[in-house]
Image (cartoon, rainbow over all chains, first blue to last red; front, top):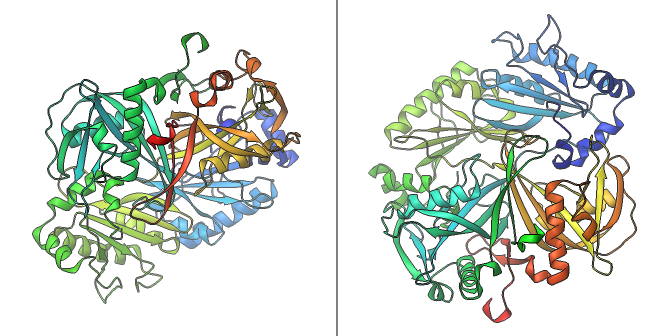
Length: 312
Length: 312
């Protein structure tokens, strides 16, 4: 784990923060004198090395090392065992092992020393070992997939765009939607999925509702956050994907709000939309605002109930 | 991937749904006649087998197989190459390879055939290979970590509980918070983190704001959803964690709303809270309701603006 800026402390589990404060004096001294400590991360003749971060963790990246590509599991196991012994003696509290997929055999070797998979993606796996006192305080990996649905409301006639999935046993009207891609904003997912499923182009207006479900079917043991958004139609002609949808139509919100030919959450959000249509969208919307992240130079998107202008 | 109920179609990327509809007739026939097709998932003398799901994907679980524990990468590569050839010929569109960490070497072998890591956790890795036409339509893995902050507002005096992190370069007031554990509800995270950081016990009232940030520092390449909640204090005495916090105090909301000794998002949410305190919490809250999931027998938690009672 590289030494990130202070911002990290506000979002990484405070457990790693606690770790920082209890690291051995020799390690704390390293942080104080060297800032972000850089040791050569190459593999010397007999020794694995890595980069120490401000939390007292060490990152060993085998892609950067000069390990032979055909190193055996037992040879790697010896190297790693030696390393872990040294690092534990130095008061380091965690080891992060980055493996290119070509060296996947090293994971089995690491497992014999207590390493477990932290996460893996594409052509890399990351394993971790807690060396510190007590229960592990390593920050976890992503826990949620994000699903987004778009409710495209035609305010001129009080209708909303809905679909019926082709493959359900019980056909029920619902808002078009799907999973966010990695790096995709909520609103972009909603607009994309609506167009792909219905042919209608739209633009994002607001977030309406959030649903959280754990051990979600199809989420590979992870959880699901399902966000339903309100969109404004830019086009109205339906050209729906017949491979996914049995039907697609503009339905009066009032009808969707009371029919039993829908799912409970769709019916509920239809009633939220009807309330907004009748009383003003301020009553239900969480509009989006893009703001700069203080430390990282990036931007984030913030959703909350609108405030009267002088108060923002 | 096991054959889940129809509910899966509403949340898994529709790309897998499209796949279902374009699978070879022989595969579709298998689904129709056999429901959830079960083939023996053990390893015969020369052949890898697995379970076919309703999307036309095959899951091969090496933990269930009778592969020798010391099977070489090359031997496994031959087996897998043979299998992939057969499965492609049968019109299957995806192969999911589940590897126990002891057989991690099989990942490198699989990579030579185009497999990539889908995800890994604890003592298991899952790799995937798209066999179907065109670009891969495999559903991805979890993309977001969830951070939750709790704003504990004492309505009797208009004050809110805030902390200053010990390790920041620029001390700024913020709401206590941290990362959700896998399977932990938003409100539970807020209450737990507030107590761990400040010693104050509280209960969840509502969701106030959602922030989304991609490639978030400390999120291992994943994104971050940061949810800020409103909590009711059950106790008031501060006993803060000195390893994490420099200071902890009850600050007047009006002061937090205008000080520059805070982060932009904290200041903004303070103004949202002030608006709620002054105009009524209905103006800003998204309260939570637990509802039963239709197909899975599980429950989910739903957040949206409150509706007048007859409309729910």
